[in-house]
Image (cartoon, rainbow, N blue to C red; front, side, top):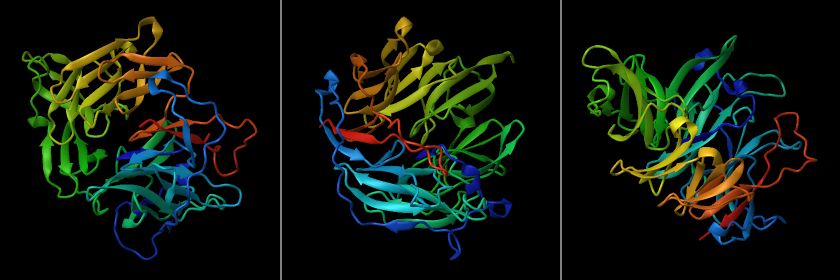
Length: 424
């Protein structure tokens, strides 16, 4: 599951300590308002045509209603629309690839975090609700998670009581309290994507770390355990995994690489440490692993600050930020073989953030870049607007922000708006 949390004060969405467990029923629990009336596409605004030669200059197709970068869920883009002065609630909307808004869920603006996942193998959106009131400075005493079918918006589970906002990665909810050193994490719970029920940790006091489409990862005392959240079945533990012979062989400890961008979808970046055969401490090693099986996919060595994008229907991993933040590499996830390397050198790191139709999009030295994912060849670099989201041939770029636009009193500013292009 992928999540988005926009720049608002989420603390008001956190429940108090009495709500540290999840449950699936309760008439008094906060529930968002669902509207399923279809709204037609909005024509594209008057913007300069996007003429990246790599894309043959597609024409703008429609204006997206989102105020933040949306998420892909099946044939739908799911995103947030902030309140305006005449509204008290924000909404999460589902827009099909023609630009038509198919559904809208109204919810408390304290709970702007939302995400996409799969419920019984169908794309779904997860939306929070609470009884907080920002205008009255009322902190939530009840926070719930609710899942909606991404195609037509019907509710598939919820309301489910959770201890706080969506923390992620995936269906992980918790409360963060302010402290003199930043933030302290309170109780956390992982939910079953199919039912919304809490997932029982595989061992006492194991902490939820990562979840994606029904696969969950827990950690405790340097050991990781993966579970199927629907059945509770343990899929693997880190003590059972086979690693290259030159890696730490004794007293192995492992952690999920702290950067949330290091892991993506069903590929997780793990950091291994331990000792060699003589008992001497070994240098930590980083690797990409398959979340379902635990199998080592790619050995990355002493890398600690990477971004991973999974492309080509999960067959390839594009990893940026390697070798002192100078290299971007593509790996075949079936074989683990290196397909290509782009060494930034003085030209700057190629940071790919969006992939669609065999092309990766991102930035390099402040300019937009398009890369052929099969070969690593740079197709185009320039000042054209880089895509920020993609879904099956639909690419979204941000519109220039209106210099006259002012943030309202409840949120830290509205989004820039987005325009969609069709590339196939």
